[in-house]
Every structure is written in structure tokens, then in C-alpha cells.
Image (cartoon, rainbow, N blue to C red; front, side, top):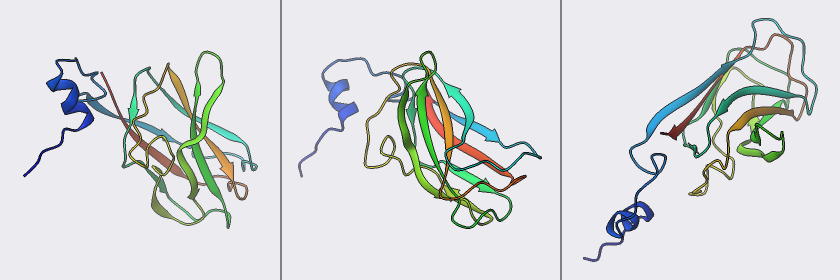
Length: 152
């Protein structure tokens, strides 16, 4: 039977050093919760969730715990922007169209920077943020974001 090398195994065979985020790096989880009391957020409002260092790889498995029902048709996109410049790198690169209208634990790893076997590494320190889409986010809606990534 034939054997094919993964991208990482090919680097090992070639004697190249792997970046920690490429192999055996520390898995971390960005955790962000909305305040217990907050106003409704309008469509296209953004929510700053946290910051990750350069050379980070986001992983599959991100979730949002939605504690109570929200506004019908309310969704979120999760993206990243350059911390220094504020320039958007990908507005829905981590998650696109995440349904937050009902109480549930919902996946938030559908963006092109994670899904589809992406090999994306952050080029610099980046801010992770959510954008309200579909319909306004209900006042006082409780949510907890858990977004896994690998770095050093």
C-alpha cells in the first residue's frame, strides 16, 4: 500500500522546522461572554470578543452557548481584523450565519478560514469580533463564545 505525507509530515521529512501552530502547539480557547445586562444590538453592530497573537491557527470545534431565545432570524458572523490597523481581514472568516435565535449550543466554525481544510495562520495579532446579522440581537440575551486555536 502506498503512503502519502501530510503537509506537516513532508516538512519533517525535508528537515524543515514546523511552527508550533502547525504541530504540537498549545491549544487554547478564546472565551467571551456577553454582559448579564446589555442593550439590544442592531444589525451590523459588532462585538469585540478577544485578541489572539500572530501565527495563530483557528481550529474546528468552536461553539456559542446561547442561554435563551433571541430575536427570530438573528444570526452572527465571526471574523478577524488586524489589531494595529483595525483593517478587516475576513468579516466572516471564523463563522458565517450562526443562528442565535433559540437557546442551544451552536457551532461557530463554518467560516472559510477554518472550514474546507484551510491552512490559514494569522499574519499579525488580530482581534476576533462578531457582527450581528439577520435581525437585531435581543437585549440581555446571554451568550458564551468558545473559539479554539493553536499557537506557541
